[in-house]
Length: 136
Image (cartoon, rainbow, N blue to C red):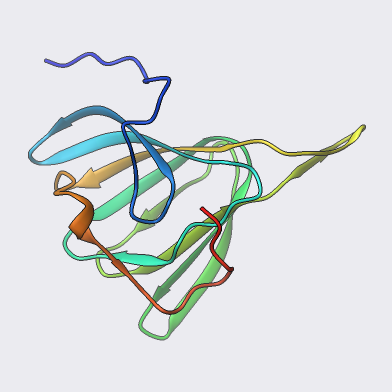
């Protein structure tokens, strides 16, 4: 029975370039906290064998997903959840939010549930498509 406080430093950099902090996991699934610095876009990838459920905790961003001929971009903001189905190409980025003083840049923070558990970096396959030039 694991109890884990969100680590301050990332455990590793994901194959897409985002920072991953590990939370509890089992062989059937795992939980992690994913962050992406302001002004960054990840490398576009797809997964070999896992699917994910994402929940945006803080920051603002956009997620591009493509499966076959179906393609979409959604806005990520606190309270939004979405799926990354098996074999879906995807890429995400941070975007600034505006307040009364002007543009505010903040890190994008996601909680990600992965099913089954994350097998390792070889899980993510780089893809040639994508929506934005990557900078993560």
